[in-house]
Length: 69
Image (cartoon, one colour):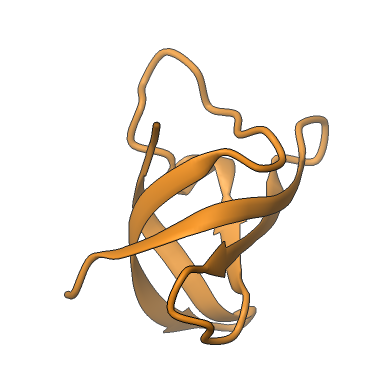
């Protein structure tokens, strides 16, 4: 898997999912709280920079191994 950089477009903490806008201009990527690599804080904030890999799921392009900066 290739790592990408992006910015959190939005993330609903109570529902545990949101979307990332990749810096390369490709389609937005679905992100679930289970994809966040940080074991202490399974949440993201709007505008936060992240590194992630992608795969195809029922949601379309989805993020895995998300690391927030």
